[in-house]
Length: 221
Image 1 (cartoon, rainbow, N blue to C red):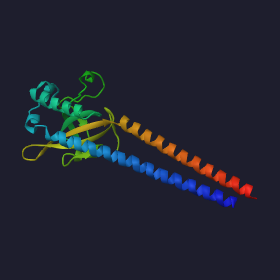
Image 2 (image 1 turned 135 degrees about the vertical axis):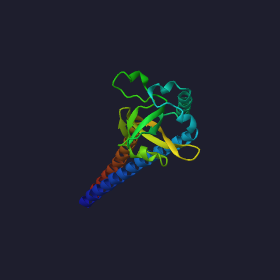
Image 3 (image 1 turned 90 degrees about the horizontal axis):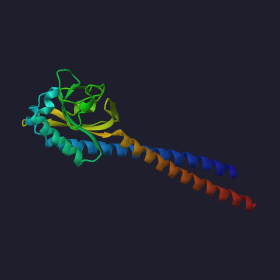
Image 4 (image 1 turned 45 degrees about the horizontal axis):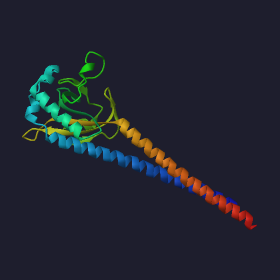
């Protein structure tokens, strides 16, 4: 009888741990998918307020940030960031004659203070190697978002993208919005801790229950 109880306890613990792991993974995946959908929605709505004709007036060179067209579009990106707390970056990129290589048109935070240093900058015409980011390149066709945390010179982020179209419906640029991956890491840690706490409470309950059963079975004899 006692051996049966311990075998049953071991099996119960195994299935509880396995079930907790599956549920934990589901919560993480579901949360990540919700973040992706939110970024896609923000990028799609933001792309609609960008004037394609105005965007095409921006000179794609580093002094292009002084143009009236750049300032107008940049203000719209700032408004989008302010309206969506948690966004780290909002920017617009355009194609180059090199496959997979994009160039910045407008960035709400181009970091001009690091131009003379070794850090990245996102002034008009600055190149960006997007060959490692397939979701970004596919955004010329339809809105998309990263399927995993992406890492580049700007840091670790999750990004959503949407095409900017002209009056004829042709995609002329990509609008991107980023969320700092640290926010995702914080959420994942909270999920881990809550899952471990629930599993620990379950184990304590099961062990207490079996201790009572074994104690009573001993006294019965």
